[in-house]
Every structure is written in C-alpha cells, then in structure tokens.
Image (cartoon, rainbow, N blue to C red; front, side):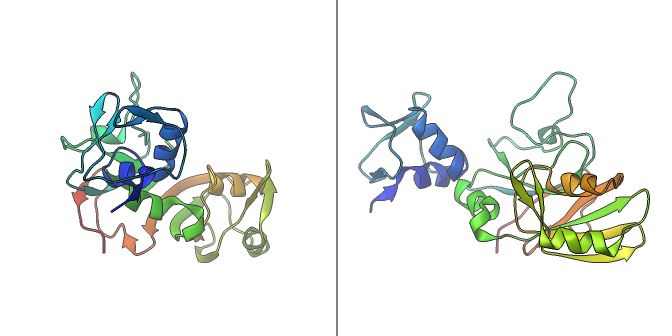
Length: 223
C-alpha cells in the first residue's frame, strides 16, 4: 500500500508531519538511492527503503507521555547549558519530541511522543483542538476585555482570539483556545496591560491534567 512520505516519517516517529515536510523540502530524506524534495511523494513501506541521516527509517513502538511541566523548563529537544529542559524530568530511553509548546514561564500539560501523526492531529490549526488554560493576574479582569478577546485582536499580522472563557474569581479565569499562535495568551493579555502571575495549561481536547503532580509524568494510550 502506498503512503505519503511525510506521513510515513511521522508514523515512524522521526518528527511531526509538518517537521517531516520541512525535512523533505530541505533534501534530507532519501528513498532508496534518491533524495526526495517533493511533497506528496508516495512510497511502499514494504518495498522502499527510507533513509534519514544515513540511517534506515523503521517503524517504532509508539510512546505517549503526559507531563505536568513546572515553570522554568523549556520545551525543546535541544538542550542548552545552564538551562532546565523538560527531558530532564522524564526517565525514558526512547527518542521523543514535545507536542506543541509551553513557554519557559508557563506550566501545566505537555505531551512527549514519537508519534508524529498523533502530534500533527493535536497541533495543526485545521483540527481546532481545544486547549484550556488557567490564568491569574495581579489586578482584576474586566468582562469587556474578555469579550474583545472572543472577537479577536490583531497583533503582528496575527488575529489572536479565544473560543470561550469562564471567570473563576476577580483575578483568575479559564481560557479556551483553538488556535496555535506563539505566546497567544500572553500577547492577548499584554494588549490590555494585564500582568500575568500564573499561566497553566490544564486540558488539551479530551486529555486533562487531573491530579498529576507538578514535575511528574506518566505514560498513557490515546483514546
């Protein structure tokens, strides 16, 4: 059965599907004896050999990890000196990558996996995956500002917006987003001069952080 090359790479855990597309366009993927630079190229996994970094790409056991990220940790596969990384918290030998991102000063739910296809389904904007955050500020929220966030705010050519909100107190709110703009919540609140004291992701679609302790992780199987 023929399968698109980028999907095969994602299924094998090399990268997310979007990252796999970038690897193809950069000419870093070879099929049999030929480097492929065209998206949409199809292969037969039973007959064709796929190479990345001069190694044959093979299907792997798929791993899914849920982590409660503490503040101060970066979400990247690259490690820098004197910088705390989420992979320092996870004791696993498998080569994994984070699904989406949480900035260094944010905390909460982040996934690690080697399943690029699953990661693609959770992160691509076209799927409109819900991400819920608990946000606390120094002052108090004004409802008119939250309503403006629902309508959308233009910032650096991006239309930033929330899907819905639920006030928990004068200074805390749960925000639900379906977009994936970089630092979207921080940019939205900065627009109204709100000073964030806590930003925590508590849910991604059907996956809840639940009672997972900060810094703790667990393996799970996607529903």
